[in-house]
Image (cartoon, rainbow, N blue to C red; front, top):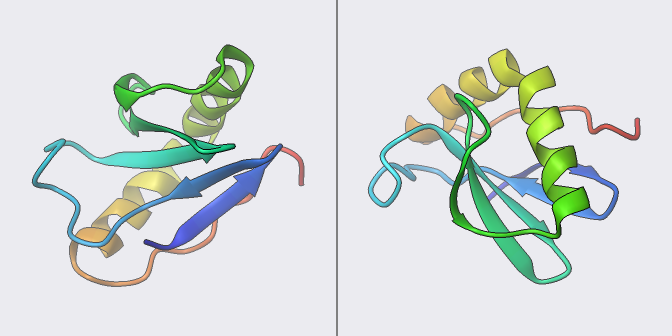
Length: 90
């Protein structure tokens, strides 16, 4: 489960071969033990939740890095390591 980005205490991860449960390109965001799964297409929450301020940061980050996330998704579903993506605080 590679961590592809970190910002404001949020870890963004993308799992290898992770297509069974959610069936759409997505990322896992973790903040202080809370985890939410977000669709890359539109930033919608597929599972879990984060505090509202952190949620808004993740959704903005997804919008900014949409194309990079889709490229990483293709790598991950093919068993390759996704690239790191710049966080919001860098």
